[in-house]
Length: 173
Image: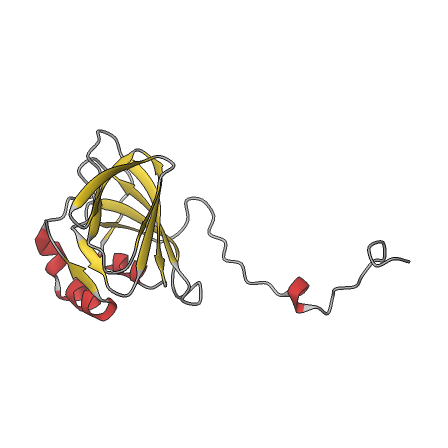
């Protein structure tokens, strides 16, 4: 019998039997309002062994975070719907549905919805961990819009401590 037609028993091979996938069904994951947006955490540094953090965002018109830089983390965005103005250092550009944006650590950036309708995107931190900042947001309430944030919300003791611990620098426009 040839090796290709022979039935192999893989029941003892951990490559065939070890499990460990993270599955977060649609509509699931902790959801908060932060910076005027709605963020649902899909994966955390803790749930991925530190590899990454993945967040689904809904950004209403006018929404988006204050300009900032991550000194220890890279960030990537994938726009699912709508358009977002991206600040990259001192330049801006528009990212639309299907666009991917990678922001290396140390680069000043932000996204802002300058359109008329909400935009949706996924964004990822590598390594994971910085997505835990969204725990300092407000509890999301169904049927209500998230409140806008002023710069003072980014200066609360909890967020200042978080930014120091994770190397996030607020760099307003």
